[in-house]
Length: 255
View 1 (cartoon, rainbow, N blue to C red):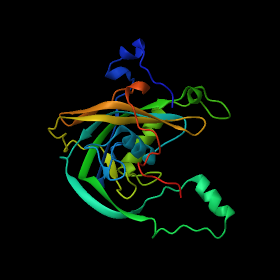
View 2: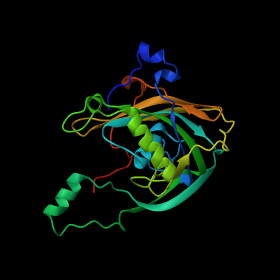
View 3: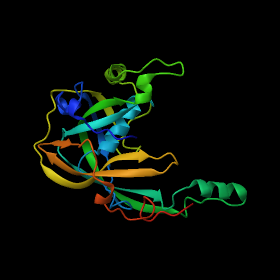
View 4: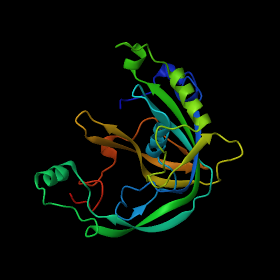
């Protein structure tokens, strides 16, 4: 993922510097969990869908390596409702090194029953969101080459619209956890944003994947105003948020 700073020429266009209106997709479901990073072992969801989760949902509907989505706004269309769920999970996290070690030792085995633990999830119930996003085509795709013609933003926008209209997707979209599946469709004017304003604290803005396979997490200060979470184009500086070292799950162990 590369930087996407808006220049003076783009700002003069209006609509935040974008040449086209936002693409709008509505998504809804029975349960959702957008886990706060400071509460990972016993999961507690943010009160609203995160931009990274919205990006993942759009990619499940339609994605090509030639472009990326930029989520601009998320409207909350149903009041925030909580539901506590307790379920059996495993404590360890399977790693590539762990799998390689088990292959070297045929007698080794992993017993899920011994590693099982009961965890709580504070999830959201009966959710519905309206996602506003733009498509950014890479410079290499715009130039074309290797037998491919130059790509245009309009092409990918229309493909997403048609897939949303038909209900087609590459994989099943979900809300934070794969078991919390999401339905989706075009924007429905019958649903309005809920009258809700709140400060949500620091929220995940995006994940940048480095050439070596490492992940770089970017953050922003989230605020819902009249039921709308506005996502800034640029995240906070890297030194603005201090994250604890170690694995993503607070108590993870290599299996």
